[in-house]
Amino acid sequence: MSSFLLKPFYLILTVLIFAQMANADDNLKQDFVVSNNSIIKAFASKDEITRLAFQSAVKDVHGIENELDYNVNGKDIFLKIGNSEKPINFFVKTEDEMIYEIILSAKDMPAAQIFIKKQFVTTNSSSQERYSNGVSLELKNRIGKIIEIALSPQKHLGFTIHKKSQNLPSRDKNLDLNLVGEIFGEMLTAQKINIANDTDFTKHLYAEDFMGADDLAVYLTKAKLLPYEECILVRIKDRG
Image (cartoon, rainbow, N blue to C red; front, side, top):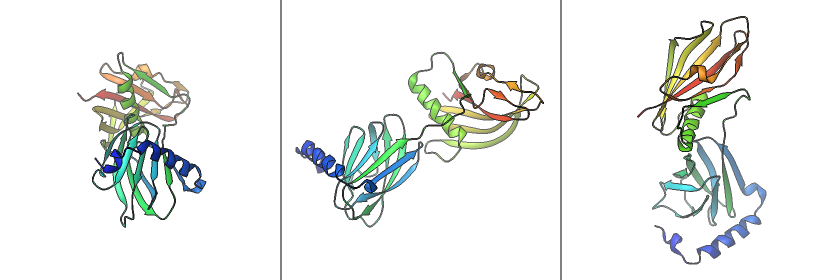
């Protein structure tokens, strides 16, 4: 562990850091609202302390153990980047199971603050989510992450995404179901299914009607479909 962590005057140093940052100009604050597995590119002070502030407590830091002086204090990381010619790259995992890739470039500036906020999936007010019995809070958090990835499929660390195009049987002959993707990660499998209303009348949807015996959860982006309208169904299973 870095000697920076072991200095007995750390508490005094922390107070001085916050005092210095409180007097810093607003344009030194760098705010990011990002989803899981996002890459965050920011500037760090060459000569002063840089603070990275997260919404959840920091669990792990990987990639800078032998490169930088840094300290983890709850939801914050304090570090000194020095006069590095190359950007510093490392990973941070927080207690809410979010993972961020941080890329810091040295800049001639006073003590800097970098605020990293979690982006929540914004869903239609009529969306529906149903869980099987006995699903824990920890499992619900993992389910929420894989649903987020299914709804906006991009490359995410720890997840594998496969595109599909397969017609599925439907209990309602007026609804067309097409499997358009599968997502694997966090010991879960998610099926992304496109549902199309092939009629001239409105169809009401109920999440429980799409829940299979081995499904942990299902998610519908809409509660009803207008004529020829479409929505997304996500079905989540345990890979174990």
